[in-house]
Length: 260
Image 1 (cartoon, helix red, strand yellow):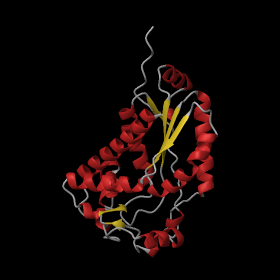
Image 2 (cartoon, helix red, strand yellow; image 1 turned 90 degrees about the vertical axis):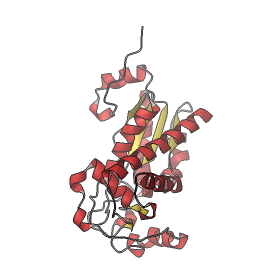
Image 3 (cartoon, helix red, strand yellow; image 1 turned 135 degrees about the vertical axis):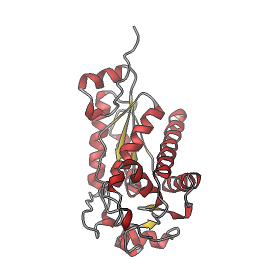
Image 4 (cartoon, rainbow, N blue to C red; image 1 turned 180 degrees about the vertical axis):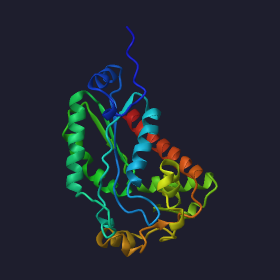
């Protein structure tokens, strides 16, 4: 008897429990946990930027990896350094860890054997890296948990993608810049306020500036909440950035799986 086919829709919350059970029986034992944030992204982008980004990456990444389902995105993240801007919602790192822990233990109980976490919000990377060993110790030994936490590689991949799509790689700063603005022009174009583009902090942040940002908030390095430059953004650049990060994660998670 042949194994049942996976449904076209791979998101857990849109499936019935019978469909999830059938998917597991068909060999879909890998599940993604996308993470995002609800935080300011300058005067021109909506607060949902990082959550929307995580949703879109998950759809691409699941197809790349194959036999992979997608857990509901954890939409709110660790954004304390953005709280000076109205509307930002931040959860404590320990709260974020508790949510990730409950996701992982629930999914492991149902039979998922690879649980992969990633974040559309780079500010979640330190928390994910810190919790990873504790998450692994909370599930059976035959369950693999991994998380992507390399911010430098992520930003470099954005710069390369922007340049390949005809944009200025120097406009990439990592927050409400040409990459993120282009992504929202692709994913939610009506939300982008083209008349409110402003240049933010340009150039790489020094270690001293990074520490000041974590300690005192993002306004210590950029008054308008932008790191980078949104001018020159296009949906074409957004498509290239989305594909580049999905490829980066697919290679990262794939190579780690092969090494196990």
